Amino acid sequence: MIPAGYMAKRVVRRPDWLKANGVGDIYSVSGCISKDFADYIKFWKHNGYWFFDSPEVIEQIAREQSIDLTGTMMFYYEVYEQEFDDEKEQWCPYEREESFFTNVRLPGWKIFAGFDVATNVTRNSPECSPLSCNSLANKIQTNSHCLLPYFETAKQLIETGRFNDSEPGPYRIFAVYTLE
Image: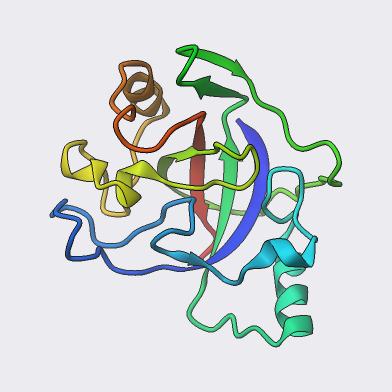
C-alpha cells in the first residue's frame, strides 16, 4: 500500500435509503455522502493522489479560506499500487499524478477503519465509493463504517465482478484510517 494522504470529512450517519442495517456511518473515500471539508481542488494544494500531504495543509487552507473544520474528522489513506481496469478485466499499475508535488507525512498514529473501493474514471480524485454511493453494502457485508474489513475481500469482490453494475472503473482499493 502506498501512502496517499489526508482528508478532512464531514461524516454522516447511514442514509435511510442505504438498507445495510449494520452500517452506522459512512467513512467512504469519495465525497458523495460524507463530504470533503471543501471543494478543495480549486486551491491546488493537493498532492498527486488528490489528497493532502499532511493535516496541516488542510488546516492552512481552512484558515486562508475561512472554512470551519468544526465537526470534521481527519482521515489518512493508503492506496493499493494497482488499479483494476474493468474493461480489460486486469490489474494495472497505478501511480500518482507526477505534475503534483507529493510528500506524504506518515501519521504518528492511526486507527484502521477498513478498506474502500473507489472509482476513478477521470483518473484523478476518487469519484464514487460503490459500497455506499451505489448501495452495494445492501448485498455485500461491510463493517459499521460501510468499509470492508480485509484487503483480500476487496480484491476478490472486484475480480469477481461484484462492482461491475455500479459505476465504471478503474477501481482502486484504499485503506482508510482515522486520526481521532
